[in-house]
Length: 309
Image 1 (tube, rainbow, N blue to C red):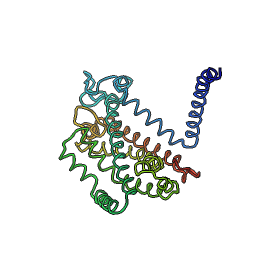
Image 2 (cartoon, helix red, strand yellow):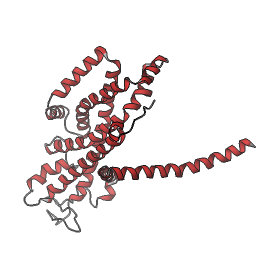
Image 3 (spheres, rainbow, N blue to C red):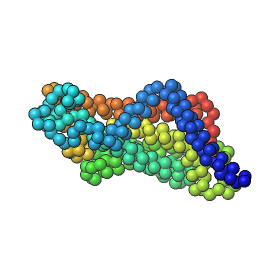
């Protein structure tokens, strides 16, 4: 009888827990919007970019390479919201499809760079000694070279393309982030619970995965979010220089570099809208990253953060 009552009560408790979790999530979102309005605006921009990238085929009225007959260099109107370019292509459609490039490069680059930076930073801080000395000198040399020179050299050697662009940017982005993650790991290692785990016989992998990584996750999330805006700006700059994704697929920097620059005085909207898209994307990711930094860092939010162990 008791087993049957427990069986009946379990689904009821789970059903009651769902509205509570939903209400708590809504409350946290509302508190975040109220305390960090710029961060909320940045989150809306980021979500909008992700939706545009995922559903570009449905949002854009034309394909990115479709030329509309008799619509060469048309000014913005009800039919063409952002006007058309010198080949009669709808700029709004090309900006929407260009979001795919920016979002793909941004998230893929930051993901790869974050994994590299976390592996380098955490292992360097945990192992210490000669390993830490050698790794940090390599990182110092890594950072000392001009960023643009290294990226252009890598892309000249690897060739243009989406995958090579992501690889080149992620290699450079991991250097600076690894120093910050190393510092956060060194600070976490001074906590008593790390020494207690070692005294209880926990292995190196367990200490890293259960006690160090969870407590530097906030730092990693902040670095990744802020780095997204930097990566999108770098991709646009490289596309402007001709080292980004090759045509005909549109990218915001490529739209600025090609017809946007050539016809800037005759059709300024060809350069205005891609530039606005770049500015909005960088603004959104930076504002969201700053807000997450203030919320996740206990020293900035005024709380006493509890370690996750």
